[in-house]
View 1 (cartoon, rainbow, N blue to C red):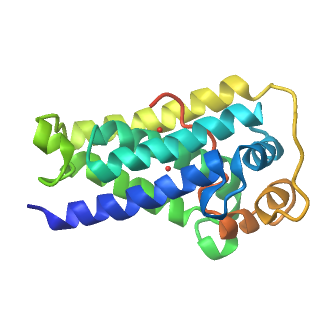
View 2: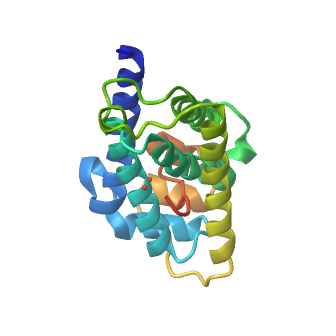
Length: 204
């Protein structure tokens, strides 16, 4: 049994679920669907409610599947999509370092997800128990391409939607999204700036 793979899956999956629950339900100190939708609107991700629901579902659903080791490549693809959108919309302009609001955290999570798609979820997983495990370099590359491509297609399709929200007074995540520095967004929630990953949850 590969204990390391189980540990990585559990930690990363549970944390992604938490970020998704913050967006969908306002759990764990999150702003819920309304606050998240307004923040996404301020990032140019419109309609904000749609992107908030899809990002939250991607993180919560993908995190749950990853923790269970069920449909691991699909879970990885959905979370990669969330992280790639976070990089594109918020972090890329700040360079790599997280201290300046950069994308190192998001890239690290993407690397972990690609590695899990390559190595597989391990023996202690539902994929293994049910005979559903599919892994390897090709699977990992497909998960990476599906996550990035799906996220790009979804955000591009909605980019001309009219604005319907505004930053929330007193909310560091949403107000930071509409005014510099963007690093405030990452300090509140490194994945909260992420949009929907496209088809898959939802990883920032």
